[in-house]
Image (tube, rainbow over all chains, first blue to last red; front, side, top):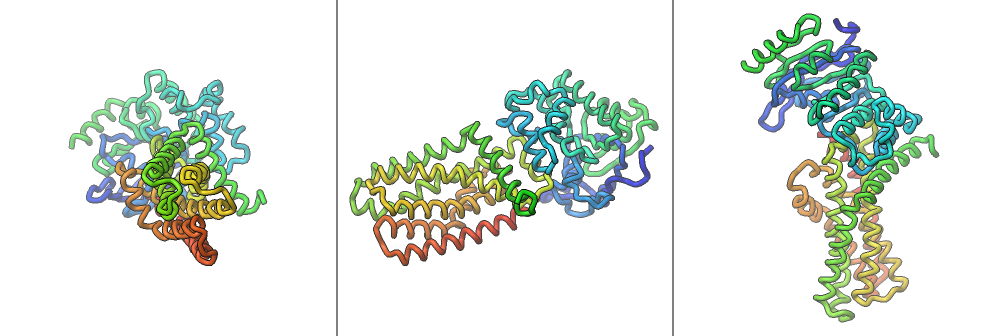
Length: 233
Length: 231
């Protein structure tokens, strides 16, 4: 069940075209505070485009994305994609302090140290990101996205390229986000990981949302069956 | 001033520029390549034109600007290429800041690098082509300052526009140089007046023109950057 009856974000009739290719067809979606929403779908389903539209990185060809408190998307979202959004020639702490300054945080260094502690990177804070492993980068990416305590976290395939250890660390950070009742939109190919983390799930295919359910209403085998049924259509 | 809107805006510009300066000083990729290319151009012209001849004096202004502007494209290209490699451009776009300030910050960093390279190239130019070090060097410095501001202003906008294209290295000079023709013309003519000991009136005319173009190009960049990085 949604944590609140008033949605945090409303996506209404969003269509997006890249030239002749239509990536999204009239998508409607509501995200409620405290939701951990997982969107599954094959390549080309429009998941990343939807996330970028929500993050205001691209303007939809048609339709609207609105935060119900009227705020602009840029200050409302923390964005994690398969790219790190980090500067390899800056250290971990320099990256966080730089972004913290852009978000006008009152004490960016203090906040950066706090987050580095939270994601287990305190001892590597002064190292250049160029020397970080993929797992360390991904944890720093999460810290960067959490800097300004955004009401909505957007995670686009955060498990891409992670080894088992990195994936486990990431899962523990995501579980702590869920524990804090943060609102999260997770895009993933990994049905098992997504299912275990989410409170609500959607399946996207060919630019449309073709299925949606709450986690308590659907067990994992049923999700798998629904997924392949929807994707094979 | 720290708490005023202007102070905050200047602070943001400096945060972005300082980040670019630190990243470039650590990687030294664009700076050294640009400098090397500029020195190479000077050397080639130095071999091609007999030192101290009338032909060299007459062609001097053209040689100077070719050595300054063509290598500058490398710096401009690199400034946004590095932002796309790890998706950091998205990080900048997502930050709740005026995108015009983002333009001014990137522009300031590009300008600082290019101006440092320009100073070095100017000294080499005067030595290689046997021009004296006198008061006229100050006028040349003024021209370097004004031309590099306009050049980086337009160049930063185009570099951002082309950042996601695979052919950006080829496209940038092709798009940039036609647009900055007025700046190049003014720079070459004003430098000609300085190097040949020409008319002060003409020099002032070209300088005024450069100032006007700088203001226009920087204002346009500030206003258009929102749309350039918007999609």
